[in-house]
Image 1 (cartoon, rainbow, N blue to C red):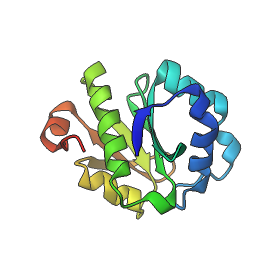
Image 2 (image 1 turned 90 degrees about the vertical axis):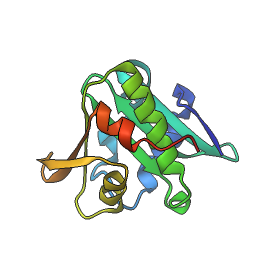
Image 3 (image 1 turned 180 degrees about the vertical axis):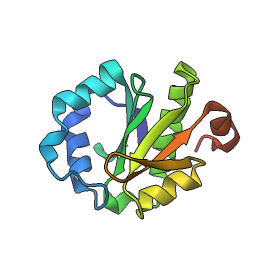
Image 4 (image 1 turned 90 degrees about the horizontal axis):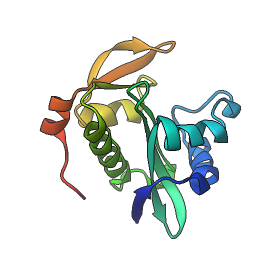
Length: 150
C-alpha cells in the first residue's frame, strides 16, 4: 500500500471509489463533478489516496475554506485493513498543521462511517444537512486521540 497526496490525475479513480461505496452514496452521482474534486484537492484544501497495485482504493479530502471533511471513502473490499484510519490521520495531521479551527463533517446516521468517526474521537454535536449526524473535532481533542503513524 502506498499513501500519498492526491493529484489531478487521480480524479477518475477517486470518482470510481466514490461510486462503489455501499453507504453514504450520492443520490445523483453528477452532484460531485471532476471539477469539484480538482477544486477541493488543489485550491480549497488537500486530498490523499491509498494505492494498491497502482490503483486508488481509498481517498480522503479536507476543505480548509469550510473547515470540513469533504470525503473519506474506501472501496468496500478494502475496509477493515486500517486504510481509512491512515487516510484519516494524514488528513487530520495536515489540517491541524494549517489551522487550529474546529473541523466538522456530516455522515448518514446508523452507518459504519458514524461508528468509525466515534472511534476516532469525533464528538456528535447534532444533525446537519437533512438529517446527517454532525461531528466535530477540535485541535486539543485531536492531539489526545491521534493515532501513531502506521
